[in-house]
Length: 117
Image (tube, rainbow, N blue to C red; front, side):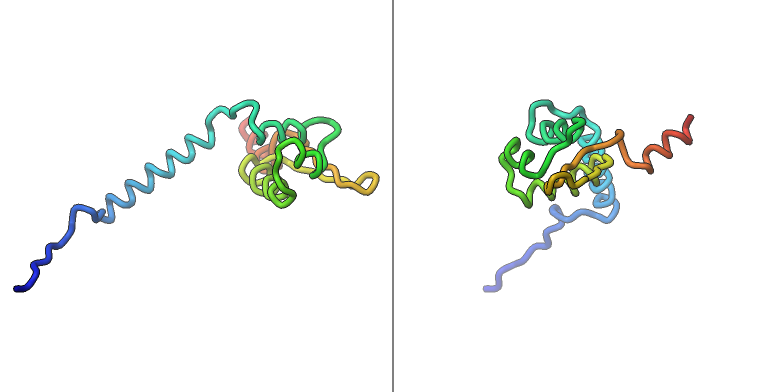
């Protein structure tokens, strides 16, 4: 006796349904990126250290957050520069590199604000 097979159509999304669900996901991501930042998190403490006039070294950020060195570097490049779009400057003083956030955002965002005025 042959086993009957059924087509499963309930689990499949049509092309229109797939596009609609992608839009929902994209809008949810955008909404979460614009949410109020939580205070007293490792990330907020690290950004506060970077915003200070003295800045922060990788070692100081490692001690404050408990992250490893490669994680701090990834945070600086991925979160501070790309996601938060902050201007990150580094300078070498006394043999150690100090990172600090200057201004509020990148030049692109500043030029957009100037164009709106």
